[in-house]
Length: 362
Image (cartoon, rainbow, N blue to C red; front, side, top):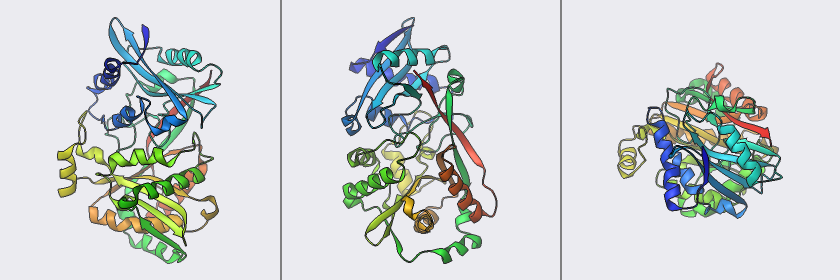
């Protein structure tokens, strides 16, 4: 096999085609995450004001058999990231190719993390279970043979949780309303003030997740660039802010599972958007991200935001929620999610899907 560094339009075209070749026999795959890849691999995103990227193809007998991107983020300086990794089953030594290339491309960097796609806000992880089920929008689907290629590396495991919407509509959950704090107010995203509200979102992300595994500080322009293409899919109710007075103290991000609108390699286009807006066939939502300033962790901020979420969820006719991903090593978030939802449901909630990032020293 030979390694090619990708620098031309024809090379990028080959880079993107590999994914379709791999997943044509996996009916559960959805290609919606490829939009993030296309946003980043050219190195033109605002993210690259503090990062670099180099893209590669592996070629065997004239056929492209693997792709990966190597990134270094100066806000996450100790590691090289191997992102957008895809490879055919015949590539048995993808780990060695990635490792050797990283040592040459980024000498002096002490670690490599395989499966982190530039930033946690863009996506991360290889799927470790449920290969027969389509992923929820925003969560990865990768081929079932991928994890075996990275055996022996340190696995940072993540999980999602799935539960019925009904638990938030029950009499049992109504009890929680008595615990609301009148000093905590909520409001929805204002699309007319998208830049302003994106800045609040970024501020809270950086303040709340500073100690989170693999978190790197963000600029608001990076998150604005991420939100803007999805503004036609997202409603203002999908991003909820919590305040004490004028001070933002938390946010909750949720959205419908847009993967229910498409199958296989099909993209979400105008017809799918109209179908969603007119009939909304989607039944699942993703409880994507919740953040609270550390000094407010013992106050019912999450409860206030969930209460603000319930009416649009009820109006949308959704029946299921999938939350995550959450790193298993992030015990604070893990315990909060399990405790809160289990209390509301009256029973212990179960883990749904499993994912992992893989790390080792160079």
